[in-house]
Amino acid sequence: MKEIEYIEVDGLLYPILKVEPVKQLNLTRFGRIRLNFLKEHHKIIYTNMLTSNTLNKHLQSIDDEANQLYDKLIDDYKKKRNITEELKEKNQLEWIREMNNIENCVLEIILKSIIYPCDF
Image (cartoon, rainbow, N blue to C red):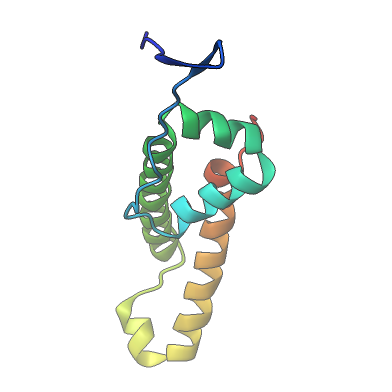
C-alpha cells in the first residue's frame, strides 16, 4: 500500500493528494459515453476512480472491450442476415437499411451490457 504524505498547516495535518490528470486518451465513443455516464450518474465511483488513478485504465478497458464486441457483432449479424457487397451493389437502399438496423441492435447490446451495466 502506498504511504500518504501529509503537510502541517496551523497544527493540523492534511494529506497531500495527487490526482493523475485525465489524459487525452484515444477513446472512441464508447469510452466517452462511459466517462459521461460515470460523471452524471455515479459521481462517487467516478471520484473514487479519479482519486485512486484507475479512471484512465478503466475507460480504456471499457472502450477496448466495447469496440471488440461491436466489430464481432456487426460481422456476425451481417453473415446471419446475408448482407454482402453484392447486395450493396444491387440495392444500396436495402443495404443501408439493413446495416442501420444491425448497427442499432449492436449499439443497444453494447450499451446495456458494457456501458450501462446494472451491477453498480
